[in-house]
Amino acid sequence: MPFKFELIVPVDHIQNEEWINTSIRKRVRNPEQIKEVKILKRSIDARKRKPVYRLQIEVWTNEKPEDPKPELFSLSTSKASKEVIVIGAGPAGYFAALELIQLGLKPIVFDRGKSVRDRRKDLRAIQQFGEVNAESNYCFGEGGAGTYSDGKLYTRSLKRGNYERVLRILVQHGAAPIILEDAHPHIGSNKLPGIVSNIRETICEAGGEVHFDSKITDFIIENNQIKGVIINNNKEHFANAFILATGHSARDIYYLLDKKKIHIEPKDFALGLRAEHPQALIDEIQYKQNPRHKNLPAASYKLVCQINGKGVFSFCMCPGGLIVPAATSPGEIVVNGMSLSRRDSKFANSGIVVAVNEKDLIPFKKHGVFAGLKFQESVEQAMFNAGDGSQKAPAQRLKDFSTGKLSSSLNDTSYIPGIFSAPLHQLLPKTIAYRLRKGFGAFDNKMKGYFTNEANVVGVESRTSSPFRIPRNKITFMHEQIQGLFPCGEGAGYAGGILSAAMDGQNVAKAVNRFLS
Image (cartoon, rainbow, N blue to C red; front, top):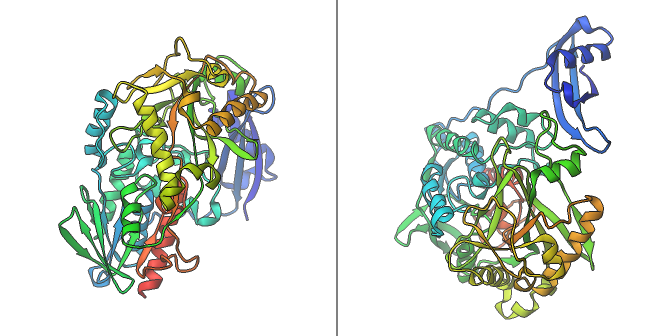
C-alpha cells in the first residue's frame, strides 16, 4: 500500500530535485525500500508572509504501482454500423467522439467553423482589422472557445466524471504531464491548437469523421424523433443519434430549436467587465514581494462578494494574459481573456461579472425565452455603438468607473484592437454598474491595492455562459421531448469550461450507447 503525506517546499527549493528527494526519504521509515514516488498534487500557499509549495506525495515501498495505460482508440468497421452525428468540435464534442469510438459507435463531427490552423487567419482579421467572421472567430471553430481562451483545466464539478482521465487523454495528445499534478492546471492558448489537432487525427484515424465549414441549418424530425440534419442549407445527413454540443454563443441554434418547437428554457448567467491590472501589482498583493521569485508563476486571484443579494465575482482570471475580442457577429463588442503557456504578459486580467436573473430581464420580457439573449445583445451593441465602428473596446480606469468619472487617459493594455475612454458606468445597465462599483470596493478589502486607477476596466464580458438550458432527462441525458437528441456541454447549459464540457461529452456518449444498445 502507498504511503501518502504532504511536503511543504520553500520556493527556493521547488526546482531542486535532490532537496525534494532527500526530504521525502526523511519522511519514510525504510527509505531503502522505496520503489516509486509520485507527486499527486502541487499547489502554492501564499497565505503567510513567504509563499511555499505544498506537494501531495505518494510513496510506494516494496512494490510499484500500475501506471495507467494510454487510451486506445480504434473503431472496428464491423462494430461501426451505428453512426452518431456530433454537432460541434469543441471539448464536449471531441471528447464525446472519442468516447463513442471506444464504445464501438462511429462519430461524425460537424462544425460550422474552420480547423485550428485555418481559424488563425480570421483571428488575425478581428485583432488587426476589426473584421468579424460570423462562422470563424474566438468562439466558433475547431476546439471551440476554449482553444483560444487560455486553456484552464480546473473545475468544481468533479462529480460529473473522471477528470483525471480527461487530463491523461490531453497529455496523450501533447499536453505537458505537469497538468496531472498542478492544483490549477493550465495548457495555454499557444499549446492547445496542436493538442486539438492531434485529437482530431485520433478521431479520424480510428474511423470517425470530422467536417469543417459545416453549419447545421435545420433538423429533420418525424414523430418527435430526430432523423437527420441539413448542412449549409442543402445537404442532408442521417444518423442513429445526435449530440448537440454547439457552445454558449451559437445563438442561431437556439432560434432554430425554438422554430422547430423543440423546448428550450432560460437560465441565469452573468455579465460585467474585464479588469486589467499590471501583473506586477497582482504579484505584490498576492505574494507580498516585488519582483516575484523566479520560481513562482504569475499570481492569480479569485474574488466573490454579495451586493444587495446578488453575486459579484471574478471569472476566467488570466494571469500574465491578454484580453481578446470575442464577438461572433459584426456590430458588437465582446471581450474575453486568454494566457499563453508561459503566462509572461505584463498584464493580469479577469472578468468581473454580476449574476443576471429573471428580475433583471423585465424590460426584455416581450422576447419570451429569448429575453436573456436580447439583454446580452443590447449591451454588446451599446459598447460597439459607443466606438468608431471597429473592434476598439470602451474602457475606463477602475476608480473612475466606480466614481462615475470619464477617464481623461487610460493605462496601457494587452487588447490589440485598442481601447478608448468611454463612460462604462452609463453604457452598462444601471443595476449591473451599481453592483460592479460596490463589488470593486469590497474586493479591495480582500486584496489591498486591487482598487486602483492603475487598472483599466474594459467592456463587455458577456459570454460567461449560455442564457439557455436545453432540457434533458437526468438519467437518459436525452432531450425530454425529442427522441435521439442529446444536448451536451456549455451550449446546452450543462458545463462551464473545458474540463466539465469534456466530462459531459463522455457522459453523453455513454448515454447514447445505452440508447442504441
